[in-house]
Length: 193
Image (cartoon, helix red, strand yellow):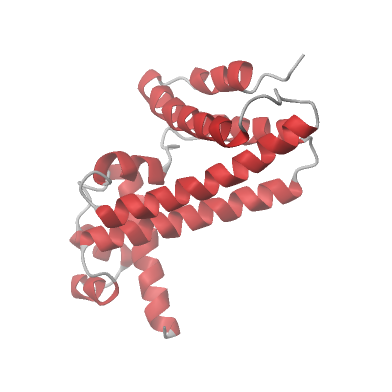
């Protein structure tokens, strides 16, 4: 893909991410995205076959960026595996305190469009599977270190933790209080005594 074309596509994705976080996917039009990207509306369709195709690309783009941040965070972590998992949850909690717009774009889009767009559902599932795999690896390491119950399947606990995080984001927004993240830290991720 020529540099200018990739640059334009990235502008659409970045503009779309900002608008979807602010207004939701259904309330964001192609015209809105093009205007914020500073590109003609017609050029949108040079990069995306449809708005749903754009949605799937947005999930992959945003999800890939989030995974890069998580991997950098993990590489920089000096804590034990459980401390690292807890720090990831704390980081999400802290982002809630600094911005009420802290929700997960992939989670929000999954709730909105995955039931009617197979492309978006597949992209979201790929993102969540990759995240669960990372979490399961950390949980297994925490179990090996004696920090977590070794009798719990790491993949199932990773799935539960991921679901709890998504639910905590929704609940924290509705309450305007990050307490649901504290429940994850104090109940699900409580160190083995």
